Image (cartoon, rainbow over all chains, first blue to last red; front, top):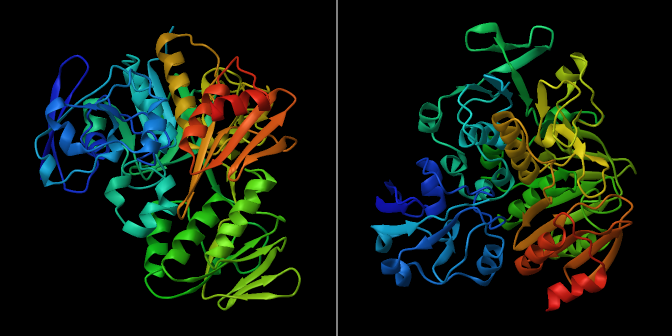
Amino acid sequence: MIKVTYVAHDGTETVIEAEEGTSVMQAAVSNDVEGIVGECGGSMMCATCHCYVDEAWEARTGQRSDDEDEMLEGAASEVTERSRLSCQIKLDPSLDGLVVHLPEEQL
Amino acid sequence: MSPSRVVIVGAGQGGLQAAISLRQNGFDGAITLIGAEPGLPYQRPPLSKAYLLDGKAEALTLRPASFFESKQVTYLPDTRMLEIDRGACEVRLDGVGGDRRLGYDHLILATGTRNLRPPIDGLEHAFDLRTLADAGRLREALAAPRRIAVIGGGFIGLEFAAVARKLGHEVRVIEAAPRLMARAVSPAMSRHFEAWHRAQGVALHLGRAAIGVDAAGVALDDGARVEADFVLLAAGVRPNTELAEAAGIETVNGVSVDAQLLTSDPAISALGDCASFPDPRSGAMVRLESVQAATDHARLIAARIAKGACPDYAAVPWFWSDQGDQKLQIAGFAGPAATEEVVADGLVARFDAGGLAAVETVNNARTHMKARRLLAPGGSADLAALKDAIFA
């Protein structure tokens, strides 16, 4: 199991454990973490699973794809260099302990 | 006075979203969510796509059981509504515990659709693809090599055809209209997908109606036969409106609602696939079968119930269909009279009297997102403005 910490906009931390291969979006939704919507179920059709990867983890989560970049243009909150669609980050052992920050709004 | 008991009939993505949004908006009354299927509410779109390949049912669950406890939402699976008693403000239910009645202050109809059963002999030989149970049966059937016939060349039939072909099955699609996805996309986009499916080795029988199904295949209206040992019926859906109609609520191709998504009874709202609502752009009554409409409707209804007022419905529609490596994205909604303008290969703009109505793209998220912004309320774009936005 891989540990992920979600830091809400108000600073509240939620720590969950998810199976390898699960996306950061799916792990949040399955564990009822507020602040990730994931309306399209990971089809990269919406931008409601927006997260900011913690600085310490940026190198390990990799770069966002071109399509992801385009979909993020529709995000409700500010998009920064560390913005990702969390449906596009798949959990593997190298991400055990991952920390992501959640935006104020997803819609 | 805000209602204190909300009953939501239909536990698809829209019905569940209504429950989620009610709590997010601070509604502290009782919420009961009623679903006809067993298990927790789940996403339907992947049933014709990823789920057929990976079989991961748990990935489809929209919210865990803990959500219903922590948010105090009473979820009644395996339960059907039998009647809406508007006089008593009650619904009659049949489920665990038998026939019973449940009172409401506000009722939300999220009853969705069911598969259309066209007048074709022998349809009992055909499979459906609507529920998780249906998709599970299809996965089992796809485990052995098959000659497959698909009746219906819409999104569901073609998504299934692409998956089945990828798995190595022989696939034939029978479509009564002269082109694929005729209700949803422009002729140019139909041609794009026609060429793509043929290139994958899918046989297409266009403009041919199925008239009979038996254990050996499908009979067509021109006397030809499509040999198949497996037949999928994907000929569209019809909205579940009978109980609303029986209760005297206005229905025309869906439960009719106004721009506040209220039915002809102000104590009853309707959302998603079962609702016919005024298109914010044209004012015409439309019924959309999409995650977007279901969830955006749900959010408006929840905000209205919790806060007492909200602006009229104004969301821009969007749709998608993954067929193999072809991701079709549609921003906006074009009526049957809309014209088409092929801007580039796999990029079609549609116009009507109000200007740009919809943009259809293939594997082009950038243009799709730009189109959604151009179509936002108050916007009215012509072809030049669209090209400026896309090619800027």
